Length: 250
Image (cartoon, rainbow, N blue to C red; front, side, top):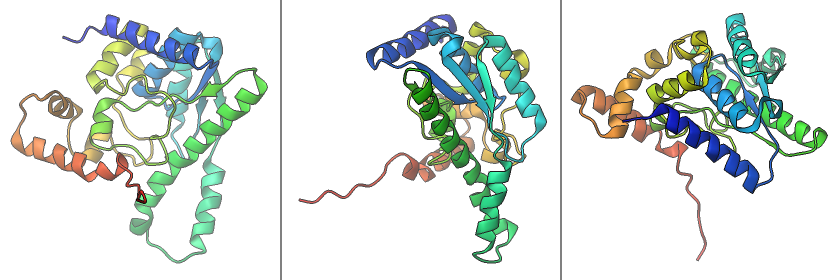
């Protein structure tokens, strides 16, 4: 049985131990307005104090509601919130790509979706380096991916797969919500239907499977064989995201 209170305490201690061991100061993380970043932000504030946590919204042709929900998280936990609008950066990049050829929307679809988290990753790390240089200590970037997303490869290589510490790495979606309840993440954020803020689809619609079923596969529980096959296919197709082949000379 998952004990959310004890698990929350363990995660907070895990964060504090890592920061103490490596003499770190603070954290910079993107706040999307969704539960995962909300929970991680709350955990970092509990572990380090809100004065050492900086959130950043990174809109890129995004919905205004996402930033509003992100601000609810900042207000709840009391950390500083910055904003860097990447829309013009994205548009400029797309303009350069347009010079390479006349590509259809369908041909560009996957590239367009994945460039956004990569721009966001670069921005968060830029800010972490900047704050490290100006605030008298090292700031690092927490990851906000949960176990269900990771199992099926629902992340972008070189984007949200890049981070320095992963507080909810082993938690399923349901477990993330339970931890969020313990630390008091705003309900509007915690129970919001998860989506990537990019494709216009919910996570489950985009994946074609339910997070509850992914959690069951991770835990070795029985589920419908058709659904299990879909999940394992996603997992196997994403293997290249986890294992980078490295040639070693003799």
